[in-house]
Length: 208
Length: 123
Image 1: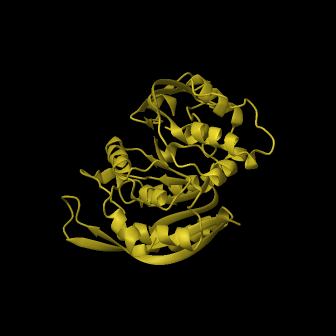
Image 2: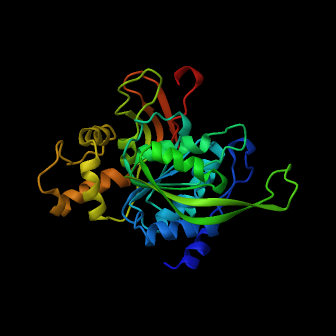
Image 3: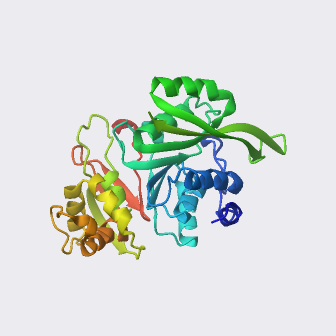
């Protein structure tokens, strides 16, 4: 599948109807999702026939993409009822059978919860901008405990050094695959600008 | 909720040391057709808690003739792999609940989604 076909496909994924500020609910754009998944699949072969987890899956654009790229099974995890309802709708509309979903709070999972049960974890975690500082690292820690091969994640470029230090502490290899511009259109009432660009790193973490 | 997902899930209620496997109490189960991928199934088998899978399938009345212990040389046994495929990926619990074996706490499954969220008292 070509990148632009994957992107077109993901444009059909329904997004949040009433995004919740405190959960940092922003959809991952079809363009970014397609770029991420395309790389994970073509460069690293970490999707096809693999058990994949999508932490903080929201409405499921990454999970849908992984399923379309023939993951053996992709399991989405999210805390929010409304997002999961849209996720299920998307799954049905795309008629995908290799997707499952679990409602839970990623931050309250103990390390042993799903330890090493997945080949790959893919995620666009909350960045920690809404009274939840540090949440991105919690997601990362949980993701690393779940994956045997690799974790793919988006993090603010401004936190790169901090994450590198943590990766070293956790004895995990960190590779910044790309720098992306995450274009967030005004989605909440308090947003003054029409859209704002945030520099994010697309990172691959793997055990050393 | 597929049984492969169930095989991975544990209870993380506070104080619980053995929250696995979760007991399935199902009120609605569906069997959907899922494309058979023998390499995937074969690769999954060593990662599974086999007895938990058998117990879950049995509890749902979908054990059929899946053996209670793994057979030798399953990688080349298409018939066996198809049975495993069916139980792992095609049988889905749509409504019901999952019960923590240690605390008894029940986690509802609604429209195929297990809700593992904890209340203040059990996290």
